[in-house]
Image (cartoon, rainbow, N blue to C red):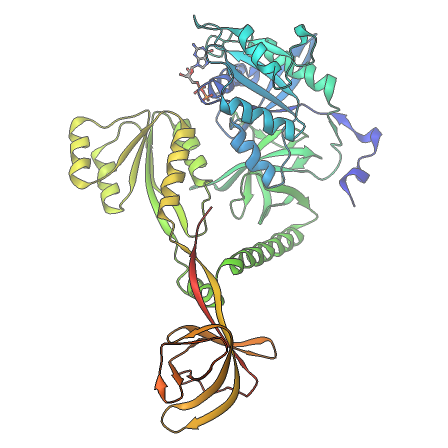
Length: 521
Ligand code: GDP
């Protein structure tokens, strides 16, 4: 049954809007998310520390009514597009952060384009108004060119001047999000059905196994539900909110950490509740098979059967080993999560061999030496001695203070590790017209070269009635009359010997091919 059909109008209940924060790097997205997270009333009352689990909810008072807003805790349009690419349409409203001292920048425009392409309404947060060079009016003027016309200029986009740093007007921004959602969207879902939604982030926890933060989009998720997320499945063993509080159920727009999946899904993977464990497993296994087939098909396009077999035999993946040290467990975790999500190719991957909070130590350098790892220092440094040791050992230490930059850099390094990719190019076809049996050499095919040029030593296959029967042959000798030659062109006759391979028939076609390097995108 289609999801729409299940949603009878009277069953629909209002649900909170889900918000993504976008904007140019350094304009204050992370700072804003932190400030909003700290307004979380429940966490404050419980004296709890809100953890980064990929999404969180806050309660806002709008005209005397308590209203919730759900924030996706990965800023930027990269995460937004990556999720959409996997089918997850989570965001209802986008907050576009523009620094008032800097104005509209390239990623501001990208963010607008992405939000508009997804038909997601935008609320503009003009940030850093506490700074001396702040010019919020200029930002308003600039954004008008991109179709974001402030209400005060007669348009319908809400602009709020804020300081994420000082907390100024953040309450007004949250109100603007709710007002925009109320004015432009009909956010309702049926809570009385099996839950569906999407994975926001997931990782493997040493003690707890697969830990996935999911956002329920419709229905209600309960403890004990059998679920499938992408190609992972399991039974909901426990649910926790961002304050680490255990939950029994999660209603639409609620993010929860779910324990109990048997493997780690990917951010953006859709999840759904299945009728029972067996069904959940079957769905997951079917998806796994489909995914494998798709991957195989993808590779077939660019590589020949031979190299495909070779790749499977070796199944070699080059690993970039990384040691992460950071100033807080939150930043280390966030960085590791983001790094693990980088996907450049099937042939290269990232492995975080060690992580920790605090300065870079001798132990970190030793580990990196043994495993040939790169050390990433996120807002942390080594002392003089440790830096000297790293230099002597040839261990590279990279320093970052912005996750986004680290990711860009590592992604570039991974691309640098890629081996060239090859593509098969057919170079000739020759028809077998006679077969000479030689006791010394085995069968020799008397052929007419129909197109291209046959060269000695080239790889070839036999086509019989248009079907490739044997693929891994080689032109081991090539003759014109009695002479050994290195190549024979289209329109000429030749004698071809295929080494110890003798299973040829008159009418067979010998197709030669070469592997040529293709440029990667
Ligand atoms: P992001 O790259 O968009 O996530 O930007 P960040 O949140 O990391 O902020 C970049 C820098 O701007 C940090 O040093 C922040 O402390 C600073 N910043 C963010 N918001 C404000 C603000 O409202 N006022 C001032 N003065 N600085 C801010």
